[in-house]
Amino acid sequence: MGGLAFFPTTLIYKAAHYLESTLKVPVVEFQDICSRILGPKVAVVALLVSLLNLIGAMVVYWILMSTMLYQIGCFIYENKYPAPGNITDPSVIPDETGLFFKYWNEMLTVPFYLVFLVLPVICIKKPTFFTKLSSFGIVSIIFMVIFVITKIMTWGFHVKETNLDFKLVNIHFPSLTGTLSMGFFIHNCILGMTVHHSRPQYKARDTGIAFLMTAISYAIVGGGYYAAFPNSKDLIADNFLKNFSNREVLAFVARCLLLFQLYTVFPLLAYLFRMQLFYAIFGKVEVSYHFVVILNALCVGTCLIFAALYPRIGDILRILGSICGLVYVFTLPLLLDLVVSARTGRKSHLRNAVYVFLIGLGLANFIAQFIIPLHV
Image (tube, rainbow, N blue to C red; front, side, top):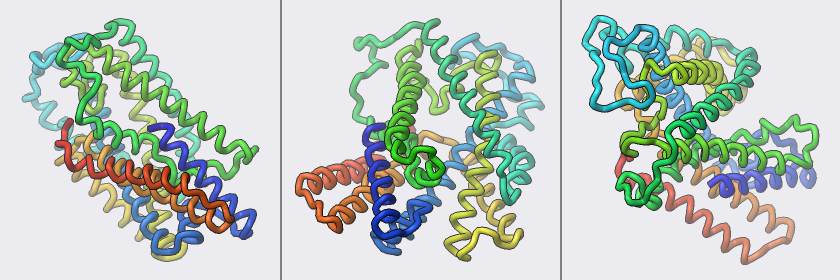
């Protein structure tokens, strides 16, 4: 999936270079390329999917922040029933009927407490301060990888095929491909992220390295944790930190770092969302502050609905990932390259066949999300 997601980024760079060098047209975002080469209607589709991706990311971030904040609060509170030191034992059910848990509920109260912490921050017109803070997210990623590696070394691997809980092949694998489509999705803003690259000729190479590093971190945290998990694999939560006791010190540190990372990135997502939406509607980014507050309130309200009623980040990620993957990964970059190749006289039947196959893969990935059951 990392390779499949990386290849279209090279096509985006190629199309941008074609517009800038051949047609002398400045390119800022991916939607600009779609509008110039594929037409304004396709650009509208690209914009809508980009907005869907951003609001979906905000929903997932809100659910994760609620979970992290809830578990951090439980750690501080000193739970009445001690949980196991490493893994959550389903037979041990803590007493959550006290007064503390009445006002500290993962779905009913904590998501609403976040409103007072997040809403004032995302109403800042230009959150440049959080752009600098978000760079510290690498610290939480490194700690998360080290945390998982320590657990792998402690538990060892539990991957015997005779164990019914462990399967090398599972017919529900599209749930993973859908999630990875979201995990490797950066195509809608790849040009903006690399616009100040000191050596533009190495953009594709450096992007490939970034995808490789991302794939390695996913393999360690996802694959390594799955293989080492000593209990039934069916007990692995969509947020794997839920599998650790609230009293686990390393897990507590991981939750604090992850909460900080999510809190610093969320304002940037909200800013990108309103910037794209306002530019599409008003033709400019700077609008009346009332519109900013109203839009942010609507975004926060959407996040609260999902956090309170459907906090299943696995389902949200894989469905959104399959949609964004179909449009931004498997379709639009390939269509761009086909049009550019036709205009420059470099038609190829083999290329056409390969691209049709890749688009078919993206379509199959999207359809599969609605065939396999949810919560798998």
